[in-house]
Picture 1: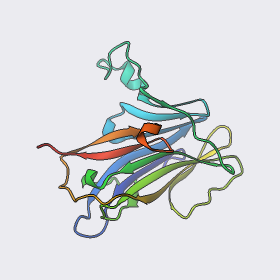
Picture 2: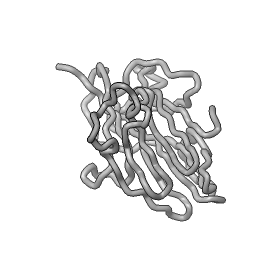
Picture 3: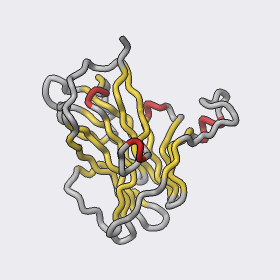
Length: 204
């Protein structure tokens, strides 16, 4: 694993649905910036947490420079912008990536990705948490450590941990034909931490 990058996948590893997964997630740092994306968006979109100043989910610079950018000129390339979260005792929960049970598909998990084992349940939401600590502060958590510490120029460190949250039970659905990544960044989304959630897509 590269020093400044964490690679991970969510996967059901036991039971009749073992092999269903949501792979290809990346978190990395550069200078004072933290980035989150998935290989499924083909280098087009990423979340960017720039220090304490500018946090956003935006189209990548590579997309803007391409011959066929996703958005034409004049459109804002960062349609989701949000305030940085606050530190408490030297720690802050910066971002979260969740995968709904109905979004898991049959896909191979690359050998270089850390597997987040997922319970095959419709009443829990598996989540990868992107956390930051101030210089000299160690991460204290009982959650699975997925990646980190990833260094920032200020001496802060970025970590990725994994857990799950209880949700209202859902009716089981068939394996989806595809999936969609939805940003959750505002009060209207009823979240206290910005993030992304992967949901399943079915036709018909």
